[in-house]
Image 1: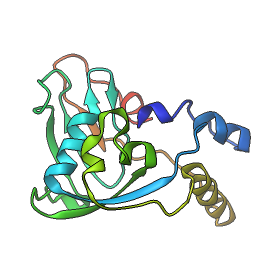
Image 2: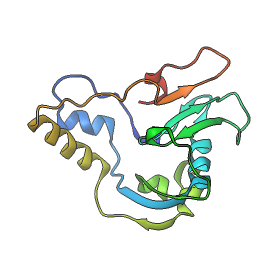
Image 3: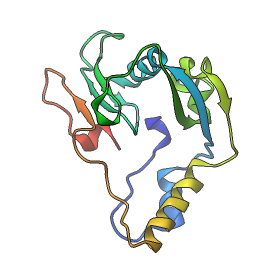
Image 4: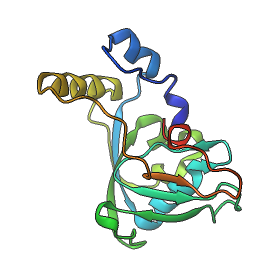
Length: 162
């Protein structure tokens, strides 16, 4: 949920204080199985004129000026395949959203909700440490992953995918 991210992570060295500024809440990772139709519901819930759900593993084209239920114009899996409405997909999110927070009630209706006891913040720190040891920088996603097709001037990638 975009409200769970409270700051941008600046380039350069990152301290634990920086990580806590970005992620001040003790949200846990949650996994759940959703149908493609439920994934589309999550995406529809997550796009509005003022907000966009944070995502990875999909590309999304939306128009926040359209009526609710018609805002998602396109959602694709890696490789460009469209989401199959009847297929089942493993989804990782945080426990707040998985339990219906911020109106994401469809996540709570998914199958096999699992909370492995890992804080999202701790997983981010472990990933940054692993990348640092391997000499790999943490980089922003490539542009075009989330596209706002509003009739108004489109929001930049940075505005919709913090």
